[in-house]
Image (tube, rainbow, N blue to C red; front, side):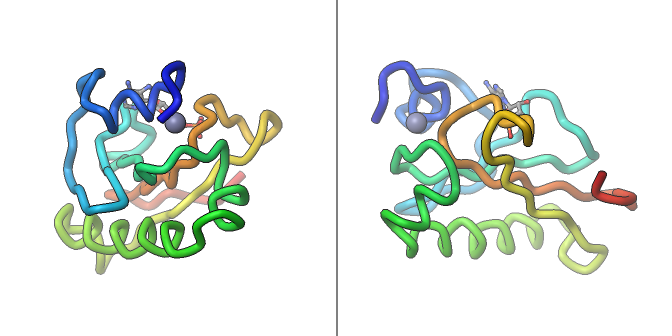
Amino acid sequence: MSDDCLFCRIVAGEIPATVVHETKTTLAFRDIAPQAPVHVVLVPKLHEPHAVALAERAPGELTDLFVAAGEVAVAEGIADSGFRLLFNTGADAGQTVFHAHLHLLGGKPLGPLA
Ligand code: AMP
Ligand code: ZN
């Protein structure tokens, strides 16, 4: 837990979020500024600044994020139509919250990545 980290504070219940899924290691909630009809952010409860650091420290928790993303996709009804899983890593990628998080986007054709 990092006191000045937004996603740690959401995990701790100190800041409200629309939670759609929770496991022992993972919390998933709706993005506050959705970029697609379905836009869910999946975060490890463990604080690491980005996905690579999480992979180095706790690879199982990185896997847990992907498993949870699949479960959310089923619950949101987009498992068959398809979805995008995305980690922004660092400033040039547009990362704004430095607690590792996996974006799950779908619910319409998303077009090219760039
Ligand atoms: P990134 O730009 O990859 O760091 O993604 C951070 C995401 O967190 C953005 O898509 C924001 O819209 C989202 N976000 C920021 N604050 C909140 C919040 N309080 N609740 C839910 N999502 C948030
Ligand atoms: Zn954090």
